[in-house]
Image (tube, rainbow, N blue to C red):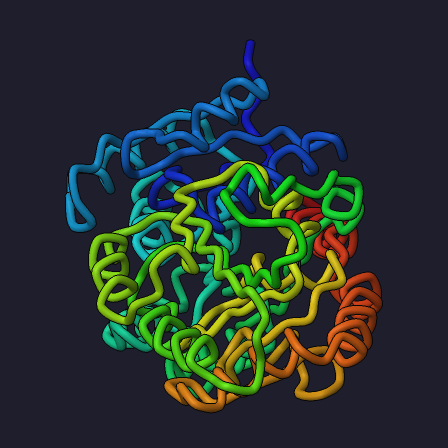
Length: 372
C-alpha cells in the first residue's frame, strides 16, 4: 500500500518560471533527504510539471481553468483527503488561499499547513488584505527574503511571530562550471561589450526604462565601444519592446533571445548584468549573475536591495531613473577595474549568504519540527 506523503506541495501552476523551478529543486532535495514528496498544481501541469514527472515525482493537478475556479478547491480538498499528507506546503497566492480553504475540508489541521510568498506585491494590493484575514488558516507564512517578510508584516499586518524567513539560494558551482557561449553564434563580433538581462518580459521588470537608457549610452560621445544588449526570456511585452527598440534606433544592438536553457553559459560570456525591476521577491537571475562574478546594475527596490549594495557588490539606481541607469551601464562597460571589483565581491557574497544548501537545511528544519 502506498504511504502518505510527508510533504504535499501545492502550487498555482507549473509553467516555466522562478517559483515552479525553485519547487522542482526543493522536491528533489527533500527526496534526497528521505522525505516522501508529491506535488499538486491547481492549473494543468505545465512544462515544469513534466520535468518533475521525468524525475520520478508524482504530480497531480486540479484542472483549474482560471485563478478563481472554485471547483479546483473542491478537487484539491478531495486529493488532500485521499493522500492524507503530514504537511501541506503551498506556493503563490492562489495556491496559498486554496490550501487554506481545502485543508479543513479534508480534516487537515491548519498547524500542518505552511504557505509561502516569494514576491513583494505592489500591483494587486488586495492580495495582502486576503493574506491578512486568512493568516490563521495556516501554521505560518514563509518569505524568501528579508524584503518579503518585512512587506508582509508591514502591509499585510501579519505579525512577525507568524512569519518565517527562509532565504532563497542557488548552487553557484552550476554557474561557474558552464562553458562560455560563443557570442558569434548570436551575430555579435568578438571583442564587443555585452550587457545581459534575464527574466520574463513583463511591465514589472522595467525594460522600457532599460531600452531608453541603453539608447542614451549608444548615443553618448564618451565611448566608441561596440555595445550589445541581450534580453533572454519571453513574455507578454515582447512585441511592444521590439517595436520600442526599432523606434529608438537600436537596430542590431538589442538581441531578443527568447526563452533559453543555457543561462549559465550566457552569463559566462557577457561583461555585465542589468536588472532594472520595479519590484522583486528574491530574483534568481541576480543570484546567478552574482555567482558568475559579473558586474551588476540593479534598482533600489525590494528583493534587489537584499542582494546588491551600491558600490560594494554592484551599482544601484532608483527605479525609473533612465539617466542614472545609463550612467551606471556606461561606468561598468568602460571601467574594467570597477567591473572586476564589483563582480568579485558579488561572487563572494553569494557563496557566503545565498547558497542553496543553507536554503534546503532551513526547509528541512521546518518540516522535521512539524513532523515531530
